[in-house]
Length: 319
Length: 226
Image 1: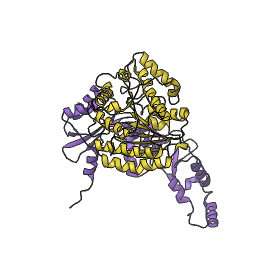
Image 2 (image 1 turned 90 degrees about the vertical axis):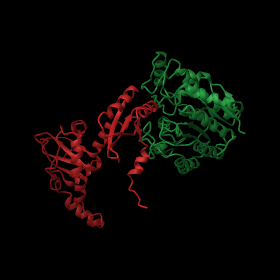
Image 3 (image 1 turned 120 degrees about the vertical axis):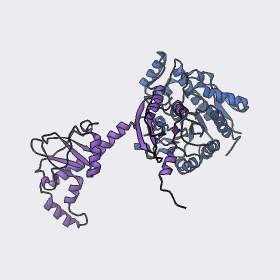
Image 4 (image 1 turned 60 degrees about the vertical axis):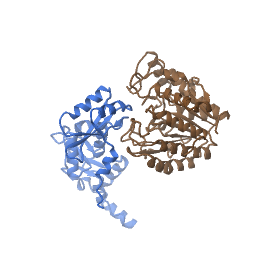
């Protein structure tokens, strides 16, 4: 069994998005309670978050944007630049803790105390741009994690694999010009799904040309399409890039029962997705991976899918 | 939706006496495909497209010396000899819809825009039109497309728009198309949000059918007889 860390902090629940917002504290409560109930939590190394040092947030985000975000929370605003981005007074503190959780997981994996980790954090991050919040995201947790790996741990090549049903526009744009970070995303086709980017001809810019790969999935399609696209697009991209570390933007909203999307990935399909990734992790990064929660809004399915995903990280389950 | 808002106005124009050789160089340097020809007061005389220019050039199949000789012979002619005189024009107060239909019908790639005295005011290319439609559809902004099948009867759109307003969602655009069943229409609202769960639930509760777009695609394919 792989020694797997689990980042969770009760303070993540303090980010209050108001009634009827799908990105709710109940998402994490459901995950946590399910892991307790199934006994899975006892098999994990529990990691409590610390707020990230601002210098790491600044490694990705514009300093004026960070200030604007903090001020919006201090003023007690209920949304930040768009109704999607619901905030409360605690949101910016929680966002620092979310990034901090990812960085701590990275530290523990790099020091060898744990083999890999899952971060049950919120708010999510992959839509957040350098200077703009988007789609429930404020700080780009995974992008900051990639910069932290490079600047604090001397890792040269980081691959980010994003299987949230929405394209991670923020992550892609942050690393568009950067040949040291490979961004791969599989998501519902942008003509139908938020945020309308991530077409297959978006492949990076300038020096970063060829270090972005997108696999759009038409609505109504599911397991077979995911299998085909990941084998055709993800596997060769990772093989060519030879990453030293892999970060995951793990979204569970592509599931057939998640109303946020039109894709039909099944529970088994999710197992396949995790398995393909873990095969790559074992082959290229010596087993090192940190998986970071993004979306997933069906409160019955999300805990089950996360449990399955974590079990596979632990090597207690395989496809 | 008027031509005046979308036409290019930073125009590169030439006089009728400019040589073909110089005009070709200019089009290459500025990477433009349409070059309006005007008189000294700015009245439109004609237009040269990259195709007019290509037609005037010697064949690339000629051997190099032959090519150069022919090129030398024709390069000095004035552009007025190869331009399309009295080209099809539009007015700044034309709508983009008019222009779309004109371009489709007349199969042109760009239209000079003139005032009623014939002075050149701008030029509108298919590229400008494409940009305009990307803009009106709002598809360069983040959002989600819903696909809804409704009965072809009045009042349906109101119900949908009401639900979208109740959910406090901005509407990017709406497309309405024919559906394969005659008494139904497909409505595609583009919502400028990530958060579509609430709106989808309300639509279903009110009895609307959310369309699986892929099913629509498959049903449009020609049927294979068995």
